[in-house]
Amino acid sequence: MDINSQDQIDLYIRGYASFNHDVVLFDFGEVIAMKNYKENDKVRVVSGGSSCHTEYVGAGMLTAAVQGKGTDPPTPSVVLRTLRELSVNHVKGILVTVQATSTDLLNFGLAVERAENDDLHVALLGVSDDCRNNIYPRSGRRGLTGIVLVNKIAGALAVRNKSMTEIYSYCSKVNEHIISIGTNIKKMLISSRDCLYCDKCATDLDSGGRRKTSLKKLSIMDILDETVQHLLLEISSNKTLNLVSGESVVVLVNNLGALGQHEEYIFFRHSLKFLSGLELQVVRFYIGTYLHLKCDVDLTVTILKVFDKDLVDLLDDPCAATGWKPVFQRETISISENIIPGSLRKKCRLSPPVKGPKLQDRAANILQLCLQFACDALISCEKMLNKMDSEQGDGDTGTRLRVMAEVLNKRACNNKLNAVYPFTFFLSLSKLLEKSIGGTMGCLYSIIFEAAAKTFGQYSEEDNVQAEMWLKALENASLAIKKYGNVDIGDKTMYDPLEACAVLVRKNSANGQYIYAFETGVAKAEEVAQSTRQQGSKYPNPGAHAVGIWLRAVCEAVKLRCMD
Picture: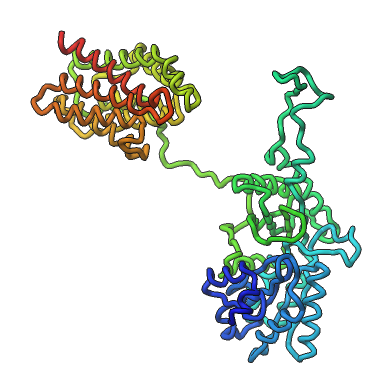
């Protein structure tokens, strides 16, 4: 390809030719062809036009796609040149499919007429699948997304080594049994959206003196079910398709930005429910971005009536085109969700099993006192923590920690926490917070208690609880926050004071004075918590400050009972 002609070819086409190594780009226009098309001794299928078919070039679908520049159709000369290139040393013939818009059909039609005058074996099939074609004059009729299914079937028939006459005849029947409808959901949403402020339906005034109502702005989800019913009702009642109960259909939804992925599956559910109500069997349902159209629509729905037992197999045949999105459906689609019962029957218990070393009664009481002191401290600091959090957050850290503390206190007061076995105790705290608090806060503290429980679970029931186990539990809790919180020292989070405490306790406990080491570690944690203040902020990180609060409370409880 020379530099001048290369510069004239659309950047998208050139980029796609570089991206897909199974295709080639002709040097005379926006024409993508299969790289090994010369080795293909079967009928060749060509499509294109003002809508982009480039990604459908590949084994099992198109041999070549001829595109125009921008939204214009390709010129007859480029189409003809493509047909001549593909006819060199090839006698099986070329089927040309095109959406039956006036400009596309005219340009491709002229090229095919000239090709036939050159004694080339070609045939043209115009796909006019818009269900509203009967309200337009014949010259204004158009094709939508039905051509995607036509091209897939044509490509599969070619791979099966069917003749040109057989492929043309079969695809003509497909054309007779396919209907599409297009809409613009985003425009519909804007036109049907209720106002937030309205004089007519006003009930009172807002702070700015404007009349307001309780009406909310509509979202796509609010109109999705109604939209599905409107579109499918118009298609199913179309006399051209003449659908009756018990028949099987294939559905293709072409989403051009109207729906997110989440909404696509909801659209699918609504569609399936509607069609099931008409007693129609949906055997394949395709949804996604299949074809960019030049008309003003952001979503199309295509229904193909299954008129032949081989039709679905042709759609399921292998296809190497990057634009074709196969589905994982092997039978009639049901409205049910394919739910199966789980193998495990036992429900997850809030009170975990007894495991690991056992505490003496006095040590178990100290553990319960530590929990009480920590909870009371967090409850009393609610307003202060909220004030800290309001500087850069939602202002609810103190409230969430207070709720967490109240839940743990209530459980402890009702004697529903087994403090005799540290493994059971910490695992109970973890499950409580996950179920009752939830969110990021609940998850972080659940991880802390889960890691602490795991530490004690590694010992046997015959082992005596040693101070080293408590230190190891603190270190593992800190490591878990680092790992699952994806944080490190200096990130100014709750990990900073927790890790500082663990490191200093380990350093100062070498001589066996664990209580002294713990006290120095807590003091360091409080100091580090204060250093988590972000630049320009007045307060430290509220989560980090809370760690210093409950660590100090636990330390005071330990000193109270262990040093009396």
